[in-house]
Image 1 (cartoon, rainbow, N blue to C red):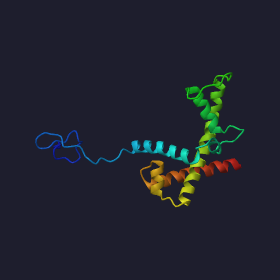
Image 2 (image 1 turned 45 degrees about the vertical axis):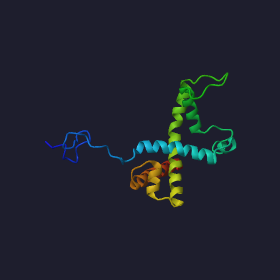
Image 3 (image 1 turned 90 degrees about the horizontal axis):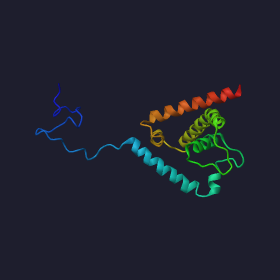
Image 4 (image 1 turned 180 degrees about the vertical axis):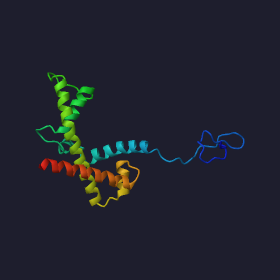
Length: 166
């Protein structure tokens, strides 16, 4: 059995000094990656909103003026079901067919999101971002993980494109 007072691998709760006291906590702990990412998500959303979606006209650039996109349809059904959005007067309640329609669209939405992410990663690299910078933006631990993610996405997008051509 190891002695927690001298074992460097013992947990902080097991470590004591020679008088049986716990040592002072580390004044410079590593940041919690999930907490840091959550804070960046909030900051990122507001940055893009302030710079590129401050007006209704700017926000409308990403939507089709007369046709609901698949991701918008799925999100709308989910928002209505959860209560995050309210039905207009006279609008029918979300029913099983609406839910089935939204579920039917999910694979298409996932494919579009894969294309969007792969394209954004290609453009980021084309604008000089390094793999460490990309990894940071994606919340991944290593540049290798970011590169592997891109390669998986690009492979899925290529496979989807090839199956669409057949």
